[in-house]
Length: 347
Image (cartoon, rainbow, N blue to C red; front, side):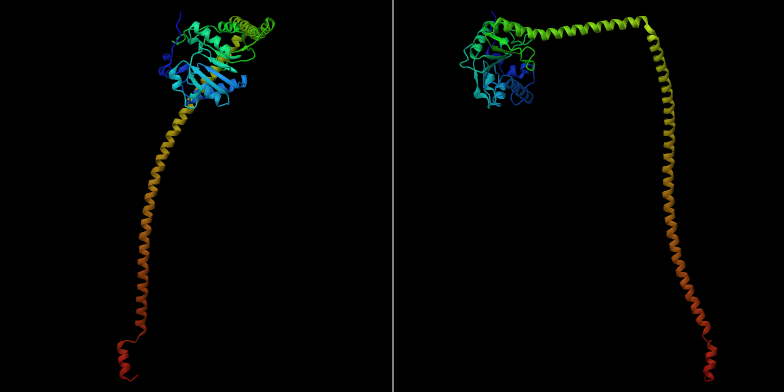
């Protein structure tokens, strides 16, 4: 007989190795996990609108914390002492170490039992179903039918098997609720005294939707198969000359591609030549700029010397005018002999 898992199987190592196959660091502080459970809580509250919820197998209580944030009276139990002890401080007082194999000790609007029962032995799983269905009229249930490489998955079953065991306890699938946002195999089970007629109608409605989709997909697949066969026949026989026409079109495109390639190579050669000419002109321009700068410098020097010469010429002209004025004055003044003669004659 298979033995169930124990508290020590869910130590820190279990949670640090990407618990539930998701992100590392399975805590409320992890942004990805927190966003996931906020979204899950929103959807569950929208579907069931519960006032009280018990999360069986709550781990570190992330789902309980998200539900409590929405005003739900939420609590949780788990067999892992490590999980309860390492829960966030804001939710720890809502959690307790306990097993679903014992009575749950109260009534709840909703009990969530998510990815837990596959960790229990077959006998313990039946006890858990008894205790859960005794504590509520509504169960959100999910149990992976596979994932056998997970070492603690010791009791995986098809969802149909779990549904049958729930039915033995008076719980039936709510066919109007889709929980695929949680997992492909998630089910909302509700207690109900269903007649065979009502039960048959529910499942027939669900079967009709699935069967209609299946038939339409099969018909579409058959039509696709026929279309493929027809196209293959046309391709092999060359009906209406389409193959030859397409081959001619391909040859035309190849010729156009070759011409375009030739033009591209010619253009590239022109571009290369132009780039070389531009490089040469750039060098000539730089040389001419250098010559111009030197010429400007020489012109500046010439202008400076010219200014100096003009200054000197100005001085010489002033000096010459002065000498000319002095010479003219001398010519107008009587000579020394005349002044002496005038003085002797008493003039």
